[in-house]
Image (cartoon, rainbow, N blue to C red; front, side, top):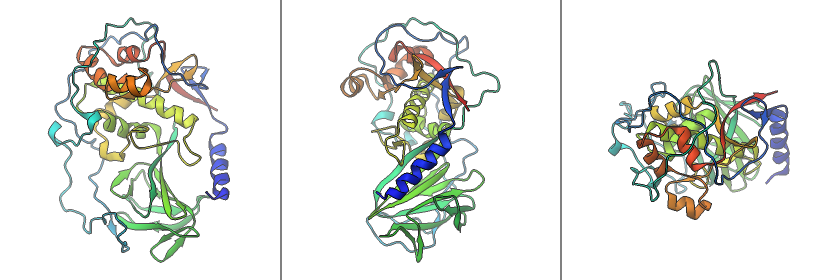
Length: 376
């Protein structure tokens, strides 16, 4: 990898984050990670009605537009990837109306009965109601959404720009007009236009950015790595969680299970902001990390779960917990040595009337809930 760009990325990272100090709750610094062991359970339940029955319908939030692939304005060579649609459909795409119309993976199937039946956990500590006026800190996470690809089709939903590594505008992009990026010996090519080795695609006015077959919030970094491309999505942590919750759990899962998933995913992501997987990105977008599909996997139920647990993470002795989880107890036992949350187990506990705090207390003993605060 080009050393010049490594230094540039490191310098930018240090400049943006060097003056920030993470803390949980009020004053506790986030410096270490912990894999949960056995012991006492965490916070007591909130005294409010729980909504534990699966929702019969999960729809996209109203603020999300119905989007189609941009119309390509440059002809793409066939490199083993399907070309973008030539026309934008006149009819908008409807959101999934029922369980059967939602694409699922093994993780997102309806929950079977867990192998082990959880006893009612003991609880202690303070309630974690969202404080009035609390807003999660504006943390940005870098997610590798494409690696080792030969070409990338990109576009924006609002007027946008192609920027160089220093933020200078190189070219404008019109809404819903797709362009193809390819690696070259000295950088990137976009049709007959030569671009630097590293560029950002930045939509305006909170628009979305298109990469291959998906739309994403935030902006994307495209890096030429010789004969291949790396594409990284820079996105707000809470916005990132909207997609992760909808990808990792079925959108009609019990509300309290979705909330537990949101907190586990937030803690896991924060660990990788502190301890990135690469100089270029914090984590990937597959099951190796956390599944992330852009707005394709955002639902109203996931938005609700993330918003209702705003900024909450799992903490142990002042550190943030790397909250591992998997689909079933068997996978947790095999992959994580029994330390982590079973998603189907969380479904079952929620259906028994457990709130998200008690679900987390069962799967992550000896930890507590804390809230992110950013101090300068």
